[in-house]
Length: 263
Image (spheres, rainbow, N blue to C red):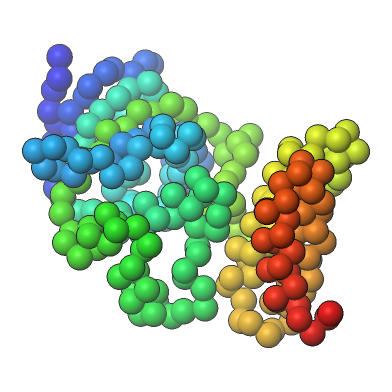
């Protein structure tokens, strides 16, 4: 039977669609990772779907206490048991278009900070008037209540969990790069080129995310750029072996454009 609850949070209603198992997990800040599927719907007659993590092919993940932009999601998820499916009505969702854009970029294997580089806070606010997604732009123009249908899949220990790049601190990202590089090299020796390319691509994304926080032309920015080049070339070599020629042309042309003075 569906039941509606008003959480101890202004502007939030909860309806349990399917009960979970076990006790309500304990969530001390920064100690648990939440893995979940979600749907985002407009609160209209059609209940128009804006996002669906299942269509993206992977669940979403957040760390409790890590200042996730949509703080209300922590409130929603920490009210759930593992396996529970619940529908939430929320009327304070002004930052959702920014969060949605970032999660869509992550699902595409891109930098979730894309579009936020080298801008002050007011500059970023201006930039967000266009997210690149018409439906998200409309939400930016006319903030409105949204419905979130969530299924909590897993509550894990971050010490044993593979963290997404956007969850990592700068030092963690830099420490992961040589590990991914070595894993990629080992996979190349086994002629597992697609898996190797994935490792190189992940390492490049980590470095580009760190580089995006540096000032262009500074020593750290330049050094990070130099670290990216061999990883991108390794990625291109893997794509060449896989006969993904257009991918190779796109990446090598981009490298040549960035380093015209080195020709």
